[in-house]
Length: 347
Length: 253
Image (tube, rainbow over all chains, first blue to last red; front, side, top):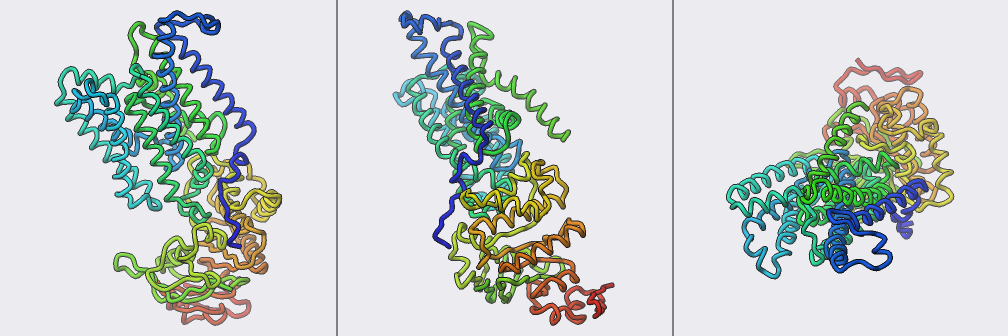
């Protein structure tokens, strides 16, 4: 009897309907279309016809391969990371209003980034490792917050979710104090860098930063997707899930660690991009259902496509200048969020 | 083969919540825990289901120490119904019940699911959203999930146990009666059942063994006829009791 070892998530595709599979293919197609649009449109349009015929000018090639492609790829992966992290955390905390910002991870990452902008601003430009300094210190900030969460909630024990949210609020407050002080002591140039970073932008995407970021995000995605069914089951309660044989503590560890990595990387490279993590999972649920096998993948692709679109918008609305992409996502996301809250209240 | 509880003690912050608990839960029998609020009934269920470890003493499932069983192993031996939590997303009743299925999906799945849905009278609400159901309906759904869990392993009942923490709360008398019948049938099929009840008369009628708990101790344990007498009950509940013998009925005032 003890020999038939049973894994709950063995039947991945059993818990996803045919309609949902079709929806996911639509999301994927939509993402690809958005990315292609992103490659060719901007303050400088590149002709798709010329690209297909292979007779782009040197300048156009330069723009396409060195500026547009890394930028679009980065925004696609950051969108996927934020959407997915939002969906996972909402599932784990069993709270439709949870978001990476809520448990303080984004704030930790932001504090790390701000710290590197203000304190190490000389190194940022001159040292050969300079461009990695901000991402590293930002991911460190995110991991540091996770470490605090982990030790204060005694290793993510059962029913510590409310507790963890409260700790998150405290961490958020502390981080904003830190950011406030650093902003206060910064000089004009640093302040300008800070402000732009905080509003979020993909304008500085370069291949040497994009590739490691994509790599980290991809690893987190691969780590977390197989946990989908377990996140479903945890909806009936942590204790109940553990009685069904699920190692809830391990599940929490995986979800929180991978979300922290995804959010830390995203924040470091593109600043605070609001509302993707909160709004995308709701949109995906509205379209096709609540089970996480569908929701996680769907949120990744829809987050990806919508962030690429937002980035295109940010590039073309006030040409030749650029709108920070964080403004665009918040401008679209906030009203949607409000509608969502009102809808929840009604039901 | 049985669950043996041997001299179990559970202490939190120098507070002794359970002390000197010893009894067995046998297959094919319904064992009922009765007792006032705060007697430690739910804590005992949590210890027996293996959610927490006793401070001292041991619990054995079929001669195997509960502490030595993995989460997965425990899930193969017992299913538990407890006071459930809110569900915040639009999962359907079917989704929730299916979560109880811990085996690979095989041909039995649909058959057993339908059987249980019929038994728990949830066929009509199976496509509805769980979170908009009434308390009693939600209870029935969780009960169906608990039953599916224990039946999902290999559809036999030997050496398997169900622990029910107030299964009748929120149910109207129709479903109360129906549920008791389901539980009796499970016991007849060889399942060991432990449940917490508050209705002394129901407990008398349907239990094989009764544990009367007070202040973290099992004060009296044994057959209903032996345990449920005026003296014991008055001591446990602090109420005056009157016992009628034909038909058997306990009145308190």
